Image 1 (spheres, rainbow, N blue to C red):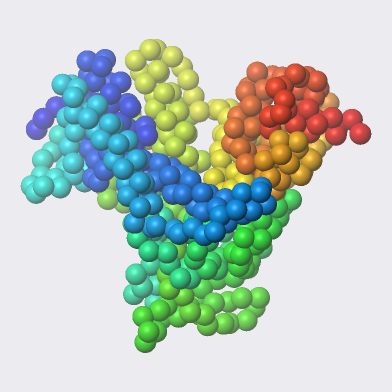
Image 2 (cartoon, helix red, strand yellow):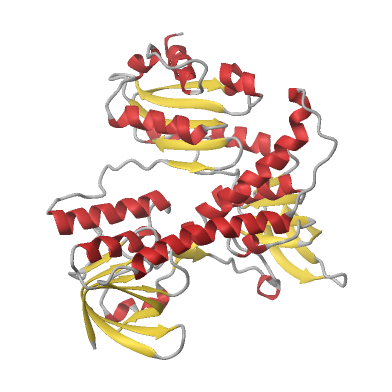
Length: 461
């Protein structure tokens, strides 16, 4: 049985850089990947979806540029070309990641499916046939998550789409039923609406974007409906059947009544679940919660000494940048002797609808539940000079501040460059800059961030 200093399961946004860091430190490292180097982000998530969103935005701008005095007689969406461009971007990123692993003499990149046979032993079912078993002093699990498929009658008999398989379409679907009204479902809904698909979206809860403040969710709902997306709240699919013409007949609960509607495609975007079952964690004694997420402490250690979990498989915020930050915490603690933890780290994120939603800190709802003495301020993008000038006036800026200390507690920026504006605010929050200082800060004119002046001036009205 081959012995390693380090074994890493999963070559995602924590696993791959950790392997490189351990290899450079002289540690004999095995990294096991059952599918593709780069994880969800590179192959099925951030990289391909944002590439396709760029194409969808180009179609959107082509359709509305008459308002800017530029007249286009017509345009055509070329899905094979969109997919080809997306695939090239993904391949470039993936091959760069893979090459860097293969070039390190201290790293063995093994393609196969890993499972524990003991606390230090890993059996690997090799992708090219056969198997092997290895041992490691330190083991890191970065196996990620996958689409959760709801138990709906007839769904398993359909060729339904997931956030992975929808990326391979080379046609514009006629009519997509989207199950799920959160980040993934909304990004794909707007993308394919702009490509030309009819979209019907179902959300089980009372509104889309349940984790966001109601006014922010309402603004998102409105601009998506303006683009022609049919959104149904407190709605669910109860049955699927194949029609004689090859379409999908869905029985839906809408407003307390059952209706049958016909669709060409169904996209399941109702959440994700950890890929922990195949790992045989029981053999190692690693504890999981009732949903299968691996339990870790603030240093990302499991209950078994020498075994760590990073990224989506440990639960919590499922973002690429959180997975990467997990890696930085682990390697700095182990290789540099630091004592870093995940406690109190900021959780910024961005949903890449158009306009984008950039978020960091607490929402107004969360702050009130905590009993904090807060003030809130909202500035519509229609009052932002830069937004008016470029014709992107949908959305708003919202901030939650501590009324006593003037500390910024959280922001939601729903704007054309919402993620970038949010990042400015995150830097202010991490630097302890209070809102009264931002109110009179000298920003370059005309930029989006300049209107943070006006956002916080509203607190003095």
